[in-house]
Length: 125
Image (cartoon, rainbow, N blue to C red; front, side):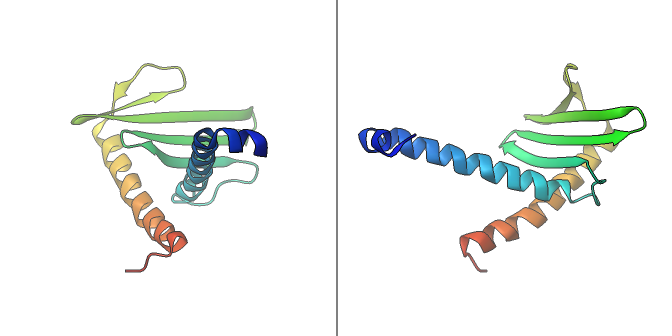
């Protein structure tokens, strides 16, 4: 959006700015969340982040002898159930071990992300 458009439609400019900030924050959280489980191999990428109050995403890219691979797992919280979908597969309930691992990952995520967000916002406890 250019300056003239922003002046003519300040609400649209504000909405676009909020969307830009949200996108940047999600990318930052994904990068930090991806580091929770050890180093990422050179040339690889790993992200783990909370998309909204009911959706979590784990995304990983890596290269091995057979080529480049990408896997995205989406976790949806539906009431008392957490389901996952990988790639184009249908949703399925988490196994007990997956549920424990997911809950541990979420806990680690909040332990790491919350203090950094507070620090960036200038909030001290």
